[in-house]
Image (tube, rainbow, N blue to C red; front, side):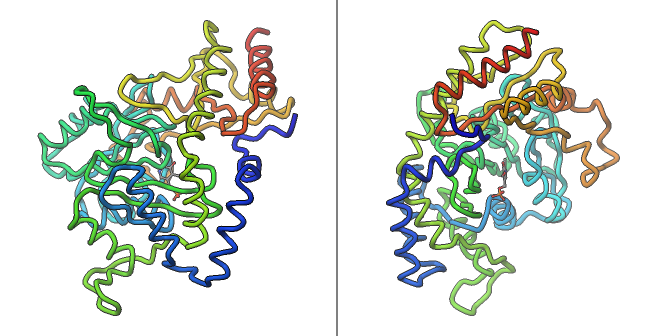
Length: 376
Ligand SMILES: Cc1ncc(COP(=O)(O)O)c(C=O)c1O
């Protein structure tokens, strides 16, 4: 059995090595490193895959969120609501643009934004909502869109962890994560479900005017070469990364299947054990298992992680500190105990290795060892 990793990027690469190597070499030979044809082709292919009118590639997922908020003409002091249980980037860009992040708690089962709490947090200054499709499953988009419509708010979907996931509305209509709100944002960080070999990101929208503006902002606010209509940023996806992503996009659904097979194995192994709660699946969304995150009940989490580490089994805590308790986000509005679900989750979640290359032998080894510790 090979060394167990949270994500096996090398194992995944080896299976598509011939295609990747030749695509990368082609870009090198073409010298079209920036905005080359590979970027345009990837953009078109991702638009088709997602069923969205516009994909704007950019440098990373954090830039995608920032560019999205810049394009919506939000003004300093405008309030943007997001979940308290997420990766920092979501709140970071809100604060960076001098907007006011308004955090709300999440559901204890799916870890996604609590829609009632979200609606209660709306004030006359609220301009946008940023639901995060955490760990690979869509937030409650139907309810979120209803609230957004009622209060005339923009919705920016953070789908960095859920690309490829389908959301099913109550009328049976399906849409891909990131294509439902005003704008969708994603990351192609190497460990993401669609990851490149460096940094990368993209923005999605069905709005033609907004797409123009997003594209312009990502390119120094330039409308025509050397004509700058907006203050923008420099945020580009490299051609080499686009060439790699074109190949990996063709495998994305099969990668989601492999992740689901590993998740099913874990679910079965832990079923009925009172000390662990396996990830909840909602009926409205596919799960693409960016992470497989357990909730531990009355278990010494660090002792379990140490035990697993002693057996060469890695584990991770996503996320150990709630956003409202981070030094950078200290605010008189926030007190410990304010977001009890988030605080509880930060104290009890633990993620196990999940990726496309997990064999049943490895999964058995991992689950046997987790159970060995739990049943001691
Ligand atoms: C939920 C979420 N949002 C945004 C980001 C930021 O993406 P990037 O690292 O590409 O800037 C990440 C990446 O980890 C993420 O998980």
